[in-house]
Length: 350
Image 1: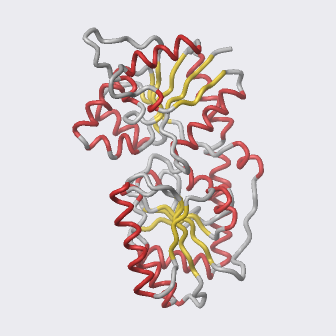
Image 2: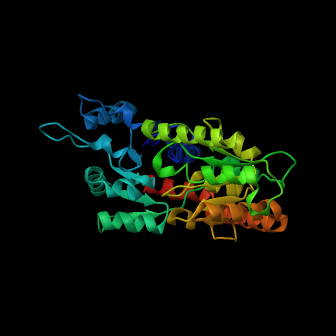
Image 3: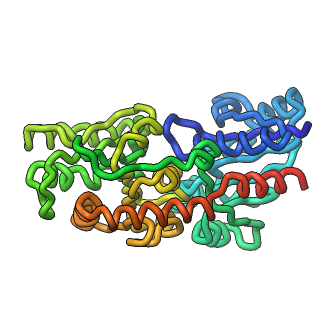
């Protein structure tokens, strides 16, 4: 049986983790043994990460590697030896999004990014926009486009979501706490909306649950301070942060929100659409690749636009049904895990 190792950063509730686990399942379902590992398994202060990686390749009889996130996983290919070590197997890259959108603008990280791309056998981007960014960094590299899929369980269950119930209207923003996810973008406006009933919404009990773990300690200080400031100002808590299980919270919420400055292709957006939930997302290339505004989701550029669209989704059941039905149909067609599996299996076996 062929054996593949996927190396990926895997913090809880992250898109990289969802992608890595789904790709591993693709391989296992198709009789390809797969092992998930993280960059920290190979990178140490004193040793050579390539040598450490080669030891794993030998001990596990690995036939190929996939690096998910070209910078965070690409550091495994850095060698400090006098005589540079050579990796024993070929590898491919699956761009996460942040590696190209954010790290591509950082000179130090760009060195790693460019080097890893040049050494790779293939690269996979979720969108044409990401492919073009990669080609601007390293022209003539082999970059294939394959959209993200949803997981098998979600795809096969085809769960249905009802309308607005009598309880709180909960919007879930699944994102780990770091600047690129922009979790503070809606906080103040959301609090004002919940307290004052902006937009003509007669329902006052609207809440925002920001779902994720702290990945940037400095930013977390600012983030938590803002939540406390709003609580003191308005005397009630309309916005909460929780590291709880994403799937459980999505199943019980009214809508899914994405506020990111940049995305590759957000798993939470795809999952929300497949679950029959309205999705409201920042108007950025990664989200525009999935959502057509007012057809299968809502895009916003300002907090006021978000409030207007959220209010319409709450009050207009016909609009909400139209959006969610179109979204589920699109995800079923364009983000099928069986098609994604065929793509990756062909890549590693040809």
